[in-house]
Image (spheres, rainbow, N blue to C red):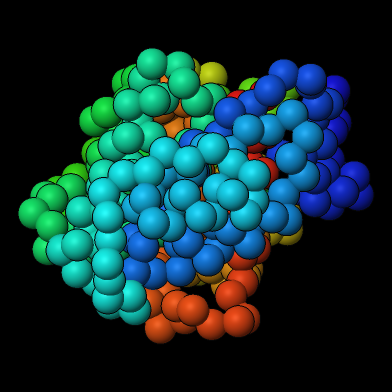
Length: 328
């Protein structure tokens, strides 16, 4: 395996890194939640399931009864109907938030008892969750509490870029309060372990700086010296190849060019802007550290695109394929 990531072969590896492993004959049971039923979750789920190679795969649908029952017949899946949802569609509401939560918790309970092997979640709305009385800020918070097995982190994994977030859905002014050498080390370990499991190699990770020019030797901030360098030192003591901190404005380009196998980002938009510039479906939202694999498409509820004929299900299809790959 030596030299696998060096030289011209790297580009070929990047194109196939999470689909190239040999398949087995084991049946993989995938729980798919429809997310917020007022958004495009039902449409992208049905389109993605139709496009999926179903050999050795069981699809279990979780969502409002009037949607899951009919969809399961059309696509040949098993229905796990939850509460009714009578609309409206195209906008968040307490009803849509409650329906999304009911589907998610039902799928989580089945995962806890071994009824499914992987979990794929269509997008939900944090606004709708709040309207439904939920204090969690999205899937990751709920999943960490219900299915976490130690530290948990949000990551976006694709064939060109792999990024893990030290913090996720919090206000920017709170990022510094929630960033510590210990947390950076946790997420670096999770990403390193995930990539190593898929490739049988020790991955090269890079840590994004917080300040412009990585602080410019303290002229633009001291966080690189006080928060980030201790995390890098601790990672090296754990045999994790974490380099940096590097200025974020050039780091992601370097990762795309193959210099690094993964990037540790400090906050949401630092990671998601480069991820989403690559295009819909180029990356999959993966929650690292759970007892079962969980994936989600790299887009939101898209209320403005509900019931249109040009729905793009590439993100949901990529999430399904990734979940199956991780569960095998």
